[in-house]
Length: 361
Image 1 (spheres, rainbow, N blue to C red):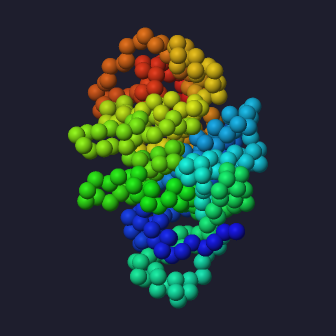
Image 2: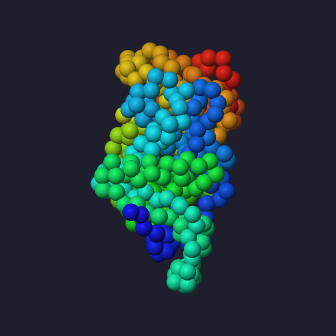
Image 3: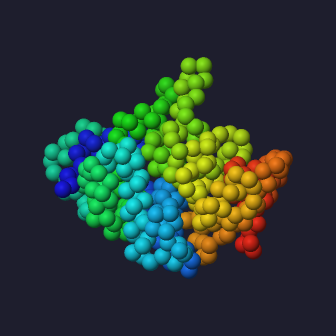
């Protein structure tokens, strides 16, 4: 059975996300995980406003992994609502269970607003906690097996998927609580004098938040393993990810994405480009393995949950292992679609054919 969150825990939860007990999710975050109604895009989670794209894209990538490589759905573009919800439940369960190091998980659900008594009010005052209708209203379900976690998620699938409900905050809070608030704080490793928080500037997702969703640790870096810079220890990605990440920042030379994210277990990537996260995936696993090994051609599919896409975007990628990397143009004059730059961080100098779709600039 679930139990109501303690106000003290609620205050700590807000601190690690917003750096203050007074922080709250803005309106853009108040949505659940619901499917696109567009033909050929029934697998797609829809984003209604800018902000929570990192959480939505991470869940989308895990949902696709389930549809393509667990349920082995022949045509992901036309899945039923039931299949979407089943895959969503598995995606969320995978994320929470991984964050709990595959030992335990916490599923945090809002079932109506909390009645705030005098004790609660006193606690909120002393902790400088401002009620927001979500954090203090969480019911927490503890699970000690994957099956129990999945059961708790399935029992709350309506809450997670309600279009205008707090499904996205619930998923983030569940992941943080599954990892443990103190561990998340430790993962973020703020430099002296700075406080680390999961929520990025302008209420966008930070890289720490996306890493927490993708590999279960809220580390700030995307390179493999640990780096020692004259005694300053920087922590990156500790294991090969189930679904990966490609970033435009790597094209610009400002970060290095390691092989653990760039070469995930399944050919599905969250794409970070122009302060937005979307998803690139391949349905031909043997084909992409062949291309990555010896060169060749493969189709990748691109989905942007915020773009009001009305059809799937198919990109035909051809890669010659021996081709010299393309010279970097003047960034200000460069008219190459950013998505192509992201693809070339994985396959340098790859040729990308948009198959009649207008390239996204």
